Image (cartoon, rainbow, N blue to C red; front, side, top):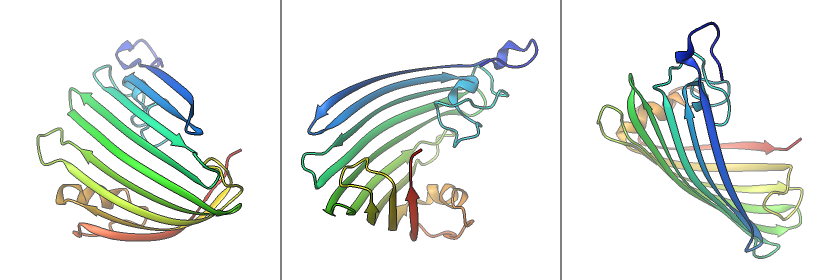
Length: 203
């Protein structure tokens, strides 16, 4: 990723290495290592500050991102499937210091019929402060009755009605409110519930 003009200090790059092992209890295990510099971190990009896409070309080479993750999906029976993910991401920059995000999540799915599933998801996140303050912590659980194109874990499209309960610490309050599309609806609370309907389809 090259910056415009002769300012090479804003160039960037990214390297991703993945290993996928198939036939793991009817599913697969994917292990990944990603490293980005400058715009290669995905920070400030069009999609969620996510590594894998181009970030802002205003970033210098001091901005780095390292991500290691393992994602396992199993389908031991036609009716039952489950996904488990573990991830660690470390962001560093001269101006912002360093911060580490760790997350664990599990989603069991049981198909009651060919086109109706019950899904549950449990996840926990921890983000350290670059200034040395208290880390942000969030734990949430979701229950989602689902209409699906099939019994398989990856069967799509899906229509889900969901209810999510989350609990977080004081340090995470500002981040929870900032990432809410409806604004700071939780105020100073350290727990909350959300409900909704979600459609997922691939093209």
